Length: 358
Ligand code: F6P
Image 1: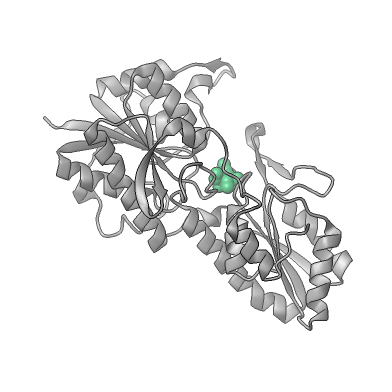
Image 2 (image 1 turned 30 degrees about the vertical axis):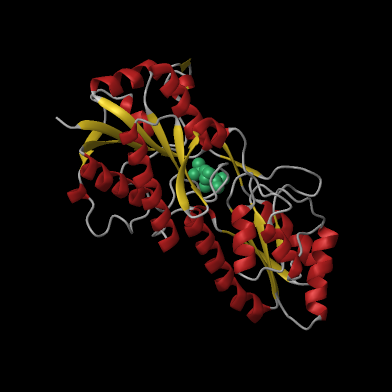
């Protein structure tokens, strides 16, 4: 009987998750491992029978590498250490997950996740003596120790395309268009897409701004004879007086959102441009992965299985200097990798005359 790898996706979905799974399944077959797919992150291991199914290379037809989302499903709520029960109480349900892994005969676990998921999975691994390897995915690209996480390149491509689409309508109507993008507390998506899409102003949570400085840049654009302006703003950018812009969802959960709409009238007033805000939202996550995300997904998926085969656990596979390497998972989640104001791309943008509103 071959040894078993369990695999799950956890946290918000993004493009490239199925491509990681495909690489894990292909590599595992070559090394003599069987792969068990766990549904809906750790939630699949709280059910009895556990919601799992074997994943075989034959399951990964021609579409799978291209397909967005995750065929296993995922969740970004439901911490098993502090699980919210139907009666409103909280319960530690990690023993149920650990026993399911043991009963299924899973010898090693591949967790495809971001910082929140890795925090939970590594504590779970420690508690249950589970051998685990992490594969980084997040459109926010905020995991430390890796140049790139799966899903980021696709999200940047979509945000860039959104600016491409806003430009002609902005020019047709003499408008200042604001594009609000995701990224949680890190401004990587706005910075990258802003440069690639030719934004005049890039607002990221890492750089404080003022309406006056934004207006200065836009009026300068106007003076130069251009009849439109493009502004990209990260969802976590606060209002000038430091207030978070958030949306409250059912159950009281909050998510960033609303800064674009908040800024639009102020920019209009300060510049004389009519201004409209577009919130890109989850469109940034649901797409066919770009070729870069497919390459990354497969390099990291292969490396994850190689580490398991070598018996190297507690690691996250990372992309550094065009190679898949292993880094201790604790180091990857020790801090959120926000944009460094000294990032070379900030220099590039400023050198092109892009304003950060500062
Ligand atoms: O972490 C990925 C992400 O898409 C963030 O950029 C965003 O703030 C958040 O998840 C949205 O979460 P949800 O899918 O729960 O609305």
